[in-house]
Image (cartoon, rainbow, N blue to C red; front, side, top):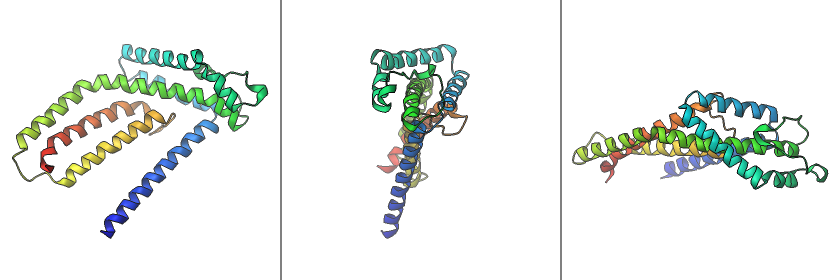
Length: 224
């Protein structure tokens, strides 16, 4: 019992540490990251992901991204609210312009945040639409693997042995980890899970998600 309590405490501390690290990374990108570097990173990610997708689907992703971004920062004029909140009184008329922003020299955390936030919002929106585009690409595979897992479950539900609770829990934890990584990818802009390889994350994550669902469905009856 004591061993289980220690293990649970360790996992709690690990989760807390990861969460704190992600928060610090997020705040760094907002307040301290050089705007010019951030712009280049986002542009590189967008261009790299173009090489992996069907051209028409990628164009749809970028159109939807631009449409949503323009609605937020042009029609709703979020730029004005950002400047009003972050900039000194005499600088509130200086707009930040998202992907078309001129990367000015670092002046202060507040100035940097006013320039970086539109860029990071653009990247977050792009990643949402990109993941959605990849989801529809992988949907046939996910359905096929889910059905395969279901039919394996039907065939093996009266067979005992071979599969252990630990094996099921391993796949369940894998599914949880994939889910956490997907959420981090979507809600933490400029989150480069593997520097320079972020464009590979959506298809890889969805492929692993499909496999994990297949394994969970295939062995579900063993825990009943």
